[in-house]
Length: 420
Ligand code: PLP
Image (tube, protein in one colour):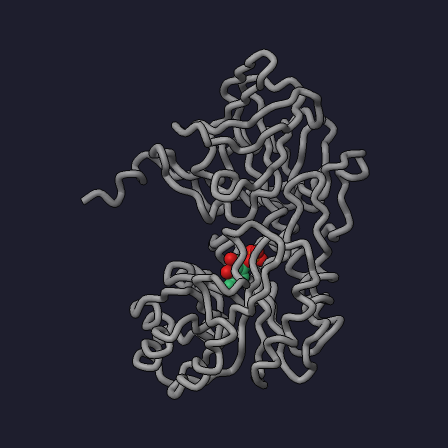
């Protein structure tokens, strides 16, 4: 299996390597390969758009987390934040690698259990868990519920007395990231502000409080806020578990240089007491760079001296992130990487804002080309919708040259499945 450092794209002289899955390469036909599979062939076999993952990349990053902790401390847990990619095949793979699992809804809990996650290794999150979700967690034997509000303390005491819980703290640390994915600040819908924490702890009577939790936000490159987090939580009181959340950023663009998993773990442990179990909850940094989306180019609209629109057969229904928080992406043609035609990648939806990427350089794009967007492995499939009644794409796992469909493409029949 390829290591994190081993990028054959890099050796082919492509500066772009780090945004693509580990082990990606350009084959003899000049086409991009993910997990040993030719993306033009994948497009022909499974159609477009499609989410294509290098299975070994997911494994390598999960193992990098486990190895980084194992090399530094004895008691730890790596908890997969499944909202990033709540797909049965991914749950199975990561359960097999020995990770625990964070779910943020009854639906994610259902998927995690169905894929074989041991209930005691599951952490249930959410700022507004319903009674039904708390009952579902109780009945399944979920290991830990992460308490998010005073109302929830009362509800859970009624529904599941004796449940092991963590308390979610908003520590008042604002990392540098987009406001929509920042959660550590005081003005947040999540968790208990530092001033409320003592009252929350006092309020708990029928539950077993075993730890504290904080999640600062997502797509974070600056590790400094993490260095103080464990100390800050430990200062609240001594509990066996400290869950320091997720949020390590990944490379979306060629210029992005995120910290390594090892440096991130170093920062998490910088101020951690040595008599507690340290947990972290990575999502994006496990699956984000493992996946690409492939599209077929349909039209190329050249507006002289203004812009070239390259329209593909997907868009905001398969990747909402550019529209939701201005996320930036790169794009390449699967059989002609590089190029110097400045392009804007447009989706096919009836919205002017349905733009997947701006100012990317392609090699003379033409209708019929297969276009690849790297780093779509996290929060793409997860946030997909049926806007414009477009069926959602399949998920393809690639490994050692074999491609298998782990989620099939939706059909038009699926679109009416819930009609009554
Ligand atoms: N933990 C919690 C509580 C979260 O809300 C999130 C993301 O929203 C994560 C972990 C995972 O974050 P990331 O995917 O950025 O690692």
